[in-house]
Image 1 (tube, rainbow, N blue to C red):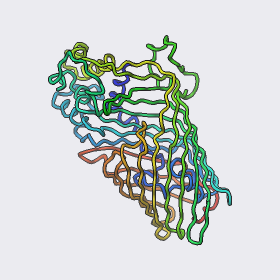
Image 2: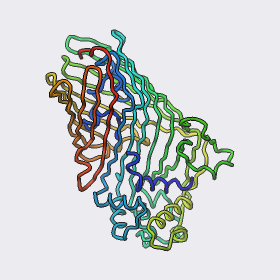
Image 3: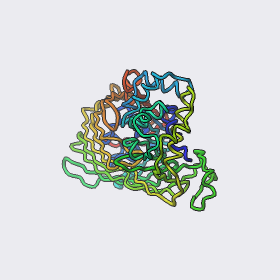
Image 4: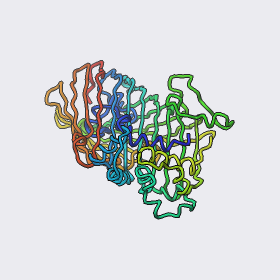
Length: 467
């Protein structure tokens, strides 16, 4: 388990497409670039704004296996991405390509990635009582940023410039030499319940309120960060991820969870969502919510690293003296972990959920067009939270009743300017669609990325209510 940094580096350089979405599995949300606070209703309001359940559009609505995935980077170009893919396939690359990769990865926003799956979600609207919804959801999110020393060591090994500028026998600390670097990821299995209803009715304004509760099963947590002279290093992995804990099994302080169930959570917690929304003259909508208030307590397979320092001479001794780049970089990364970060078992650790504030405003223009704007701000720096504020504008357009086009523009959350697009085939009882967060991302020279969300089993039962 001392090799966790190496494993994370391998993920970032070689398996980017494996964990490839945004904060929602809903194709309609992704089609608007993440704009959603005034658009979502029925079970789609779970985790976004539970107040919108008070204005559900169907008596019963449900979906099965709706999913999405994404990755993005403000560091890559198409050329460096190709080099990284060559590296992932164990292909030898030259010094020039190695230097280019080291430069590209020297960024506080190397990579944002995630996957989001609604295995099942259902909502029921009860007249005069309100709307109820339940769901099961898998959320996997990650973020990475490297400073110059970390990136050069990862790609250049013993050719990194830090070997020329630092006394090889001087004790160095991760908190200093890698200041500004971080890798964060989380995988959580959510069981959600949400309720919303109308709480005030005025001549021109209806106001709705709602709350959501989630029971959380933590399946994976990883953080390595060196910021402001302090290091955070901890991890906990479910047996389903097949992590190697052999070095710790004889330690009485290590609370080991072996594989004896389907997912085997190693952390458990609770979260709350709160929301308000208003509908003005049945045309204008305004919504605000705070989501993911709470934490997860990780209690099994939990390790925490301490920064004990290292010397470059030790790393050089462990480095490979050959021209095979991958082996060389791998041994150098492993040398850091083995000599600098000492991992020991801990009994428990509470980690906050990625709490966010959301605000939205929207307007319906006739029966065919709806426009909305969203603003989302991270309220903490918990693993899985967005890196910066998000803003976006989304549009739904139905040229005919059974066909809907969606698009808009969005930016922030550690990402570049996005132009989303998607479509849906709709009927009174069935809907399916596909959405992309940014249609230009796969073709841009700089900062390429990819995103997709789709669902083919979305159903509605009962005559929609007029909202």
